[in-house]
Image (cartoon, rainbow, N blue to C red; front, side, top):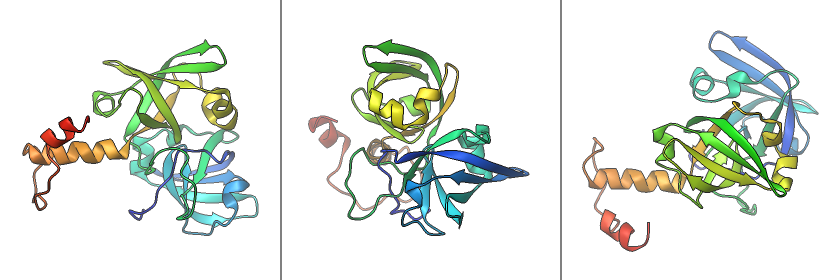
Length: 225
């Protein structure tokens, strides 16, 4: 995918999985949709459950995308079934409104729903994740779960929690998820860039360092990061 492709985590619609063709470790997925087809052409990008895929074929009521082995192994797309649903979002247009947070469509891994709790009109989801993902999760910060931009309410050593409002539940596949379900997770991309800059500063990343800048660990700490 081109580096400038960006999503916002605001799901446009739920698509229906019409067909899954597996060939070895790869697959083709055909998805019924309506809204995300508007203005879309072959070669465009659509996030499917938070995974950026390239449209390879278009019909009047559906689109097809290839899923590579790396994508299948690092995401929950391999668990999709015909007749099931998926969250869909087109790449953000240059003149589009920014409603969620910066989402690249390149997930960091998967998590498992440990617990689902109703709280008034909202639903809380406790999600177990690996240390590599949890180190980038910040309380009151943003995370994309199956492509949905959500705010983290709490973070602990082995899991984190989000609270989901009724509108989001009605417009996404999250309401269909049960305890134990696997979900795609993408950390806030800004946090990942900051972490890499800090690792360069501490000499923990190999390779040629970029030219020096005023962005240091001390500066970020003073700024409240």
